[in-house]
Length: 288
Image (cartoon, helix red, strand yellow):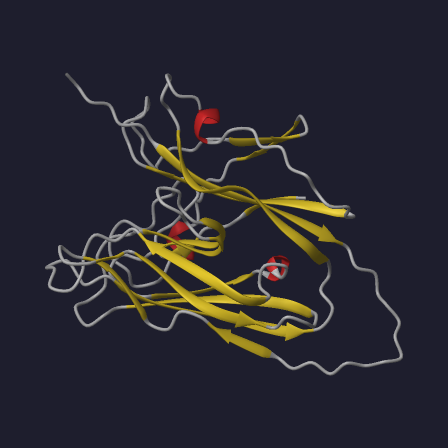
């Protein structure tokens, strides 16, 4: 009997409710300073027979008041003493809004998704200004890297993760008033004729606050192999989302892997892939 495996498209979605803020005239001038919020600091992520540290979390404190024209998230991966994981691995960093209980995982809103380079470190930055409603006060950040090596392994010792946020004072182009999760990070089976994608990503009905504009942010990356075309991540496909009956499509195909990934890494990083490149951030799909 032949056991079939089906391609998994990993997906997470968050609705960002954005209010376009008009310029306001005020005689009072509030002086704000540039703020830096440190979070992970060379935090080890690894897997060994004695310890599984593929999932880590940390506490952080963001300014409760004030406006920021831009919030930039920085992600840094370094190699531990035993060397970096030699393979390209799936990584994600999000904000845990509700703790897990029993068999139920925590509710996490994904801020960034990346793929580790082959065997070397990396540095990336991304704009998360619209996530300001979440990045306030005391928060819990959760990170995961799908590594299977650790201290003592012949294939490297995993990764060291550092992240921090730069908050530049000023009025943003649009003011986000709420961030509402639709789907937490999950695996969606694709290419299995018995299981439609709607089973893993069912229709969701949301109650939205009054706002002038809405934006839907999605991360979609293809992984796995054994679907009907047996193409794993090397297969272009169109992804669709319907909002109130209106269909929105994206190819999500990355043909820039030769230039967007970390330089000096090993492996076949230059091949185009389904929504990701080794040693690169995953580009969010934003629908306004």
